[in-house]
Length: 175
Picture 1 (tube, one colour):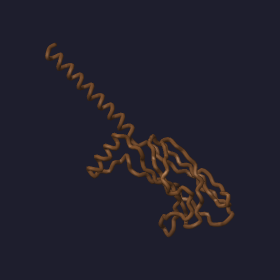
Picture 2: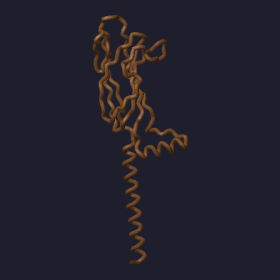
Picture 3: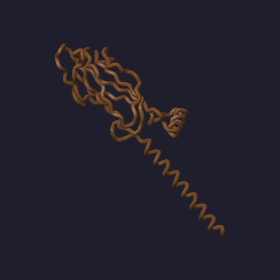
Picture 4: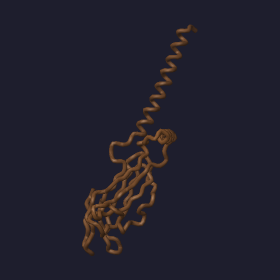
């Protein structure tokens, strides 16, 4: 085997290795890129009254990503120009819930009676980072950089009017 053949084979092997590494990095980058649509949606899809004849809204929460989240949902009211937590919350408000990729759920949330208007606030954070993501996140933390793929997500519903009159049906704004 001549020196030129050996050099050509070595160069071909090096090109294949570099191409394979670039392909793997491109696939991993594609997997890490955030989706073009909103990752998590909070939509009010209907209204009803609970067993105590108090108005509730039916809220649909959808995880439209391929990532798992831990999230919590609660109601806020606008009082004196500041958003604060509503006095009436649904039972699992502010509790961290596991929200798998592609999951949708519906929740009945009581309509607040205090404040000027109200909205729903969902806080979500990614769970179960891959090994590569964990290494990148650790390197970014070490370099004091923000790791943009693991940032907490805040999603707000549209602003709705407050329920004020007893026994008067409330029509929530659909989002």
